[in-house]
Amino acid sequence: MLWFFLALLSILLWSFSSMFDKILVSNYTKNPLIATTLNQMASLAMLLVIAFFAGFTVPKAEWLFLLFVSTLLNMTAVLLYFKAMHTAEMSRVLTAINIMPFFVLLIAVVFLGEKVSFLQTIGIFLIVSGALLVSQRKELKLNGWFFVIILSAALFSIDTVMQKFLLREMSIIELIEWRIVFLLICFSFVSLPFLKKIKKIVVEKPKSLALATASSVFFISGRISFITAISLGLVSLVAAVQAVQPFMILGLALIFTKFMPHLIKEEISRKTIALKILAVCLVVIGSVMLL
Image 1: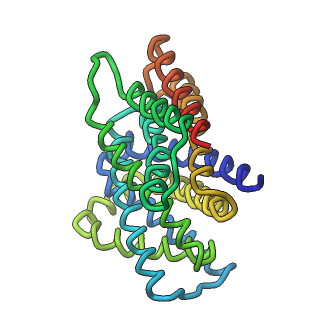
Image 2: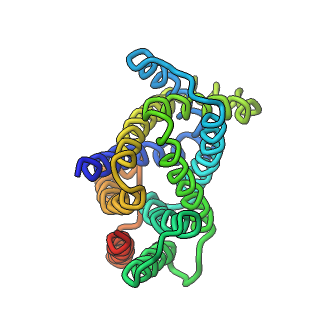
């Protein structure tokens, strides 16, 4: 059961990381690439700390290539995630992204030959229904950010399955270290056109780097906890446990809206809160039925 508690810990850490991300893209920069680059600048410090205490080794070339592909998928998913976070409310985005267990199970069925039970089919229906419900606002139509976050969830899911596969030949620390290295290399190239803007934001708004650092510390700590969890348990079960996160995010969003609306502000009408709670319940119940 250690994997279960580690999965829950990763949820807690990622919830706070998401909160810092939302503040960053809402108050400091609207460009998802700049926001992500600020996060990666902070990740460099984390890499040096991890390498100092755990050492640094070089795995086989073929495994590094697969990890590089996995990192590209993760990088694209992160950019899409920041785009959706800037456009929509944090609680809506992070409820919709919990459609991930559906994608993980779909990948397992297609590529690993796993079979889907009747209860799992109902669970998939509930998860998709919850994700669709939370995307609704006043009119009965899907919002643009919904498709962005669904694509992000699909890419995160493929990345999760690839990490489980890579852990057969790589240690957790190796995977974490090289993931950060590849992310730093990738973002160093794609962020070149925005270097002046990034420097200006850091100089004029130093809190932006502090927020990015806090987000990175919580995110990487959550990543270590998550990867340890999938190394100990089934990847589909660990992904399903992640569905608890929307409850935590919804609670944090309501607290900030009530007491610190200048940082995070969401709709808090009774109808909106009821809709979000219903959507979260559908996603969580559906995820549990996938177990």
